[in-house]
Length: 299
Image (cartoon, rainbow, N blue to C red; front, side):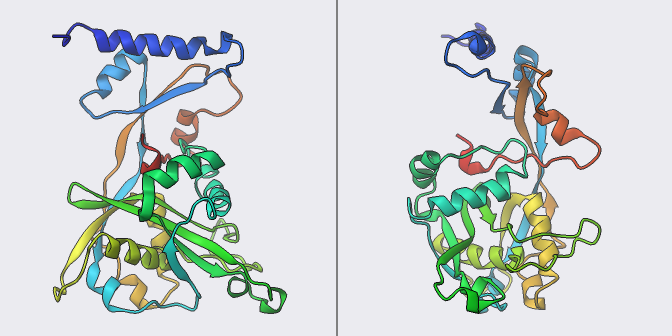
């Protein structure tokens, strides 16, 4: 029986020592921090033994009205098509879009290489990863300049069911044209049309829920709950008001609840580095950076 003999404490201390000493080893880059995800039961242990501190990831639990997802046709003037992701064909686009949508906006986000997309993400998500595509010509105001139209990925999604609710495991959209006025929040006019998050989420989520076996079956009150990052939920609420009223009834705005995750913990080894650490960026009073690790990357 190896319980209650302090072995976990020794293992954690040894692991942290190896990480701290990495800078003295030839060919190894010094590690600036260590991160892990812990249940509330074990958080005090990691805090006491390893000096880890928690960072809150803001998540929301949103009721989805199934009858509106499956009983109405796609709306909006955007020409879009849904299909399952194809690797390695889609990797260059997904990699670039993920960098802009997640890696450059969120603290804690895993930086994904091309190999990571092809070897890990493709295997982890399998056929649950859906992409929304459009053509270059339908995505620009001036069609005459895009006679040789190419398929363009403008959004992607993967969900999984956990504990009686669905979790947004992976999501993103092409926000490269989404320049907004900081004071009003209104989209600026650019050559490329900004993607509407409410439209992208509704269309992709319909495919994902259908794949998961969700149907209405005559029950007008049927609904499921979706657990998603609050920053994504805020973008959906913002853009839903721009579209027709139908897009405002798919999601139960009044029924949404806060359901944060404080399980991610970090210990910073070198606080003197010029690069801002996760605590400084997420906890500052002015323009704090949202913390988000996509469940896709939760090993």
